[in-house]
Image (cartoon, rainbow, N blue to C red; front, side, top):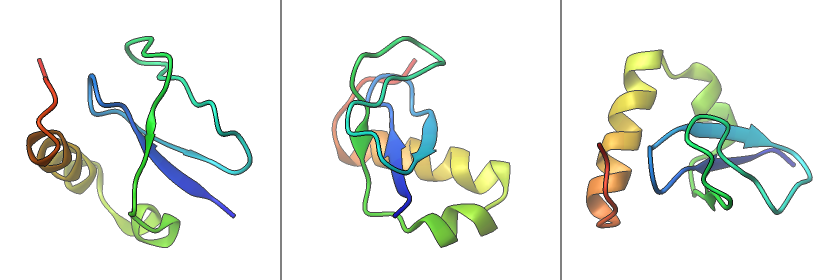
Length: 66
């Protein structure tokens, strides 16, 4: 099963299948957070929609985004 992870530091989105320890290749954060976003939906999102999702997720979860 594919899972969608987001970096709570920079908002980068990553899809993985089996790993539970997922690090961010963009900023180096050691542990990304699994989201409730289905893999199928991510596949149909444009780059702009992904950025908007990440920005909203960071805002709702009270994390810092530079």
